Image (tube, rainbow, N blue to C red):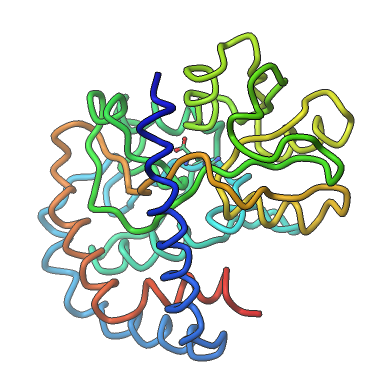
Length: 278
Ligand code: ARG
């Protein structure tokens, strides 16, 4: 039962949300856009030397597997374009490596497998670092924090993670939300949907009593569905990182790029562009 250890995360989770909110206030949407642009321009010259030595799935390209149903990390616009925090971050990393970003959109569990099978160089999909995943793939340094949140109808009697016992819980297949809820409440209590959105639709239709999903998409889904709310208590705190094949030769270059993007404010500017613009 992982329930107990996760419970102790909750105080920490609250603190990190506060910290995120504080740093968030610093950037405006316009400064975000300009610093992304300028860092993109300046990194181009530096990168070509590094690229020559990098072997990727497709020469000259950084192939990223993702599941673009997870706003604001990756989502598909009405015109069919894939955008989001992970997409902009991957673009910036690719540029630093002198590679062209190629995005392959697929189901979340397939995206995790894709790097393990050598079909993609990286998986960026708000992927949580877990020990089980570390056994089959490598992870970059973490670039964001996620919280497993609980979405319920406004009039629900569910007010804390404990109240999920005996309820039907909707999750996205292959996610940590699915894994934690099956561990804690039994597989029979958990329904796996293709995406967070279809899980939320099932909640709207009364097919499940709650949805457990990462806080950032939870906030967006609830904003778009007036009858639903996100509980204040969080179920688990997690680190997001970039997944790669075990022993991937790209790992050092990816971590170096990520470190530079953190240090020069690009990463924060990207987050501000998608999360804190209002
Ligand atoms: N953070 C969770 C996990 O790693 C959910 C990620 C889902 N991401 C997505 N793009 N659908 O299991």
